[in-house]
Amino acid sequence: MNVKNRTESYLTPLKSLITEKGTRYMLLVAFIWSITSNLDKIGVNASNSIFWAFAVNAFIAILMLLILVFQRNVKLCFTTWNLRILSLIGIMNSLMFVSQMTALKFIIVPYVISIKRMSAVLSVFLGALIFKEKETLTRVIAALVMILGVIFILLLN
Image (tube, rainbow, N blue to C red; front, top):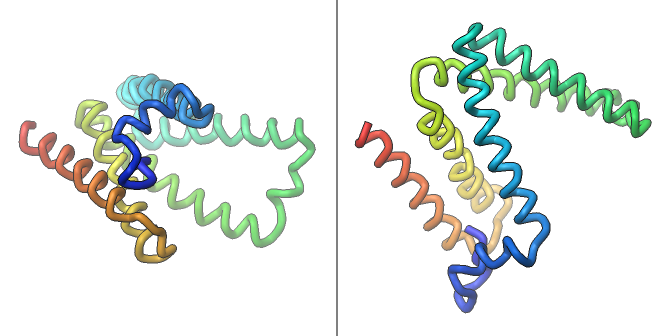
């Protein structure tokens, strides 16, 4: 998805691991998420989906609030417009997270996470339709490869 033009090598995204700090950070994030997804499975099995989703999100919210307090940016979040938008985002994220935790109760972690990552496919199509992003053909092809991967997972299960 990250090849900018046709003259670049398809190894360019891998080479960016060496040259780009942001790419290394995203690899680190993927590694951390691979651990936390398994911790989520353990937490859901030890309690239930709704409690675990609430506990994790409450922990993250408290941690973020402490960071805002430490940086003295608390009033940034509490404008009327921000509260409305943050509330809508919070509700949607809660529904997503409870759905994910419920799925973890019944299906193995890699299957749930690979289906969750299908949101990247939706982002590609929305980017092309709504934001008129350029060079969408390469991204659409990569998104179709992701869709094929999920289909293979479903067929082989």
